[in-house]
Length: 483
Image 1 (spheres, helix red, strand yellow):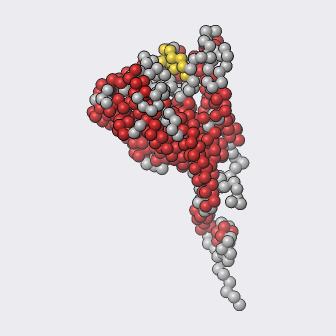
Image 2 (spheres, helix red, strand yellow; image 1 turned 180 degrees about the vertical axis):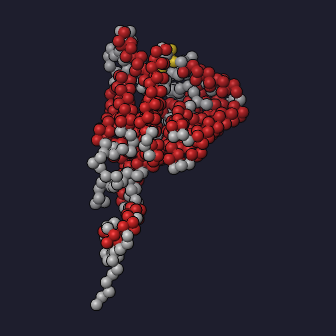
Image 3 (tube, one colour; image 1 turned 30 degrees about the horizontal axis):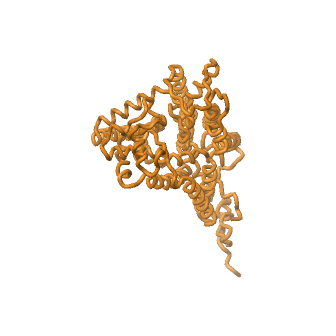
């Protein structure tokens, strides 16, 4: 007579779940022991698809195709915004400090100073367009060795490779913040690559050679460290991003909302310390010029073919109602002094938006609250700034993938509308590439500001991480089970 196996021991190793997740009768232990068995099985089937190499290969192919698409599109092409960093470093290396912040009286615009035009004409890209440099002095100092050893085109190609890698790395960080508990990494990367390849925002940022891609990478890395409990590391990374461009400093309000005084103090000390070090090493005159340019810019209302600020929308609607709107057919950029009422409405909207984000997310658990606060903040902050360039909205493109894949049905529809609105064909249709005769408004401003406002509403109504009540809480597995 054969020995009978002990109660609860699986005789078929291919069906461990039936023996480990059942009642105490199958487990051979108490009910408490049976409840502790289920997490062990989940650990053997992680949500990132590591057990099936085919899934990883498909995700790797998607990343390679996306990288090849960006690189082939911009290789050996001129990057207008990167040229500003390059030539600022060029003049810093020549100790022509008065030329670093040279530009038109309105701070920004296509008009090039004579020294900058001569420097561009001396390269192999004579006649190319560059724009004024409005970054902190230490960015120019950091770019000086690059300008001394690389040609503009070689430096732009290097920046292209770096930005491509940073976009993919940012997508992974967005998964760690918004989708790690619910969506497998391989599926996330395939969806992200597809959505970003069709989206005009990352394509436009890569075309410009924008430093903003690196800044958002630092922001996401800071949020990932913060979510993992590394408060000081998060504060230091966010301070570094704020030292490159002031706007990311607004994200430090997360520390205040979550009453994390240690992180808030570390951010403030690191930011002030970085400023003091920069002034000590580079001198006050350059910083005085930089702050003066920012002060001038803060009093201007800028409407351009690549910006979608709330204040431009308000200004054009008011002009249309009063019957004083100009014809924008041949106007790519219009700069004027900001009316007081627009300044008040914009700042009031910004403060109200901050209050709504805090109030809506204050009771969420920590693992959900961080991402749920970041997403609406990443829309509100650039929308309320004077220069809401299109590439400033790259951060919500990374995070809203989670809403599109796993959010409640209304939120999915609105996320789909967001991604569809910024697809390349739509962007070209409402942008300057398709001028409208006798247009009294800038079509892209009138189209995108309401779209972004609707997206902001969606992130408040259905916070990031919320799923439909009909869906399970289990991580989203690979949709193609046969692979």
